[in-house]
Length: 454
Image (cartoon, rainbow, N blue to C red; front, side):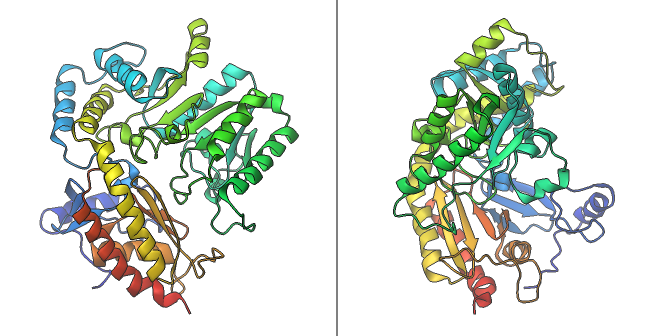
């Protein structure tokens, strides 16, 4: 099958050319004169259909955000009712749905120490406001976040982000400090146990905080599960150890759950699996499965109490947008009605098993990782040393070409970075659908990736 596939037919052809002519596309992997975006006509459940009617399985829930799947009628009808009653109101005002959603989050979903919610438009803005909160509350200026992290694309969130692409924003905002990521695959020290690794990485973090003067550090930001940089899972006890270090020095802990929240890992928030109560939790994506833009910050009691005595005067025009709020209420209702948590727990061992089988079979699969329905496949020349595959046989970028091949030849949509693809399907997926996904992945890896291993 050729990679030069037409994604459009009939009336969609004119729409495709209009989009190419007038749109500047996000996350483009080529100069726009050469960029040929994938054209989507509609979607349903875990499936996406292009402009020519071809069906694809979305194994990354788009950007790990369409947790409930596409075309959920309950959410669609909730948004329709909301737009008819109250399509928009400024975020300084109260409205019924905002109070209902806040109560739902605080009383039924969030860790017990959370007492208030600030709604934003998305995850980047949630982290921007979290930066404001920690600086205002502590009166301190420095903020720690780890390498191999992603916290968003706005200026403050990009300064939090610990990946090489952030260099395009230099000079970043002063006071943002990076610490080593506790990711074990390919690390230059081989530990006897996860507990030994945890001790090592926590010791390095604490040393760095001490050298930066703890009294000047406002917060440590951390993804509860490393997301788009490869779904890295922390060694046992690490997240709890970060909480203890923060408590020792009066530093706030912020858990970024934009990607890992809302049952993606099998818990409402990934930090809950470790019994960790952060001072702030940032969220977006799965809160309403992207049926309308929404994000937010869950605020602990001690920070909420600060704002009982101090005004919070910042905001954005579309914070707490009623359509996003209405979609979130309906989405959470569907999580409960469909027992999505139960389904994630049911499918989790199958996902782990399927990933392990790929690693055992294919010489190009260096490592696999997963928790809940949040997984990754990392391609490497070695299973021991993380000698990652960057180029294909023609000297072209491996990952981008592989993702294109998965889409065009195997009907799989996914995302990735470096040498890693994400496997994070909608949380409504069933066993037969997982089997089909891995049958296609198995064939694609055999054809395209394994031949690169000498």
